[in-house]
Amino acid sequence: MSESQYQTAWENYWRTLADDQEQAFWDVPSGTELSGLLQYFKDQFDPQLPLVDFGCGNGTQTFFLAEHFPQVLGLDVSAAAIQQARSGIQGNQPTFVVLDATDLQQAQTLHKNIGDANIFIRGVLHQIQAEDRPPVIASLQHLLGNHGQLFLIELSPKAKQLFESLTEQLGAPPPQLARVFQHGIAPAAITPENVRSAFPENRYGILDQGETSISTNTMWPSGEQVQMPAFFMRVGHK
Image (cartoon, rainbow, N blue to C red; front, side, top):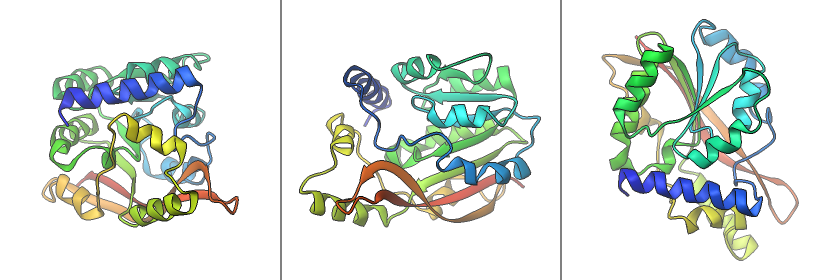
């Protein structure tokens, strides 16, 4: 998929959701996952640096972070998603910016404005094909600067089996997930090893890592919430 196709696909996706008043598959109530990470972030992130929610979508998680950190910025490639997010702003926090991370110049310009930043990413990199990730990684590195840390949560390889099982039990992909596929957005495999190789060992260290899950608003036939297997990693300069 070309760089412009990512932007087009996500723009169409978020506009369709807004028109049909639907939720994204991964859009869960603010704080559902982040409340458990809040103290961890406060312990690890320099509070003097802005906190960036990278790939923020409609800003659900961004608003939660803005309740607990002094400067929070949501970034997304889709203007439609950012428009939805801005509609929920009350006061000065958070702020939202359209940014195409495949364009390093945009990241460089933002860095000039906000300086080094801590970055939170939830389920974004796996939506970018492996061959298209280098410019996105370069933008992340530039936003981190010399002092920021990156905390990411990504689907683990086990998620594929979960999707297959869910589709089998439901007889078809969940409607909210099918909506993603309809716009040509296809998940790509990503592993902790992929993340390590993206951040050179001579400059970055893996400060923490482990297994976790990404919540969804879809239910199994049993009525249980679908939790997607995932991993987390915290990356920072050596």
